[in-house]
Image (cartoon, rainbow, N blue to C red):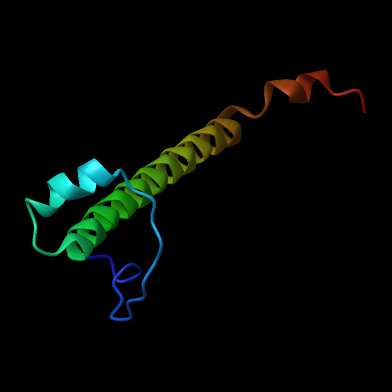
Length: 82
């Protein structure tokens, strides 16, 4: 588990959930809070990983563009009005 997510402190929260769905879920788990928490951890980690991947792609794009600029300069340099 991601250390930024893991916490020993727990507190009650209010959620609005489909009553029939909760009743069905209780048939599959004896600890609905723990089940919801584990699903929420998966959700957060999935989105953190997606955000990290997008940032890495952006960083790669910037590095590639900077390498092109270093090698050949900017096409706008030859159109300078100064």
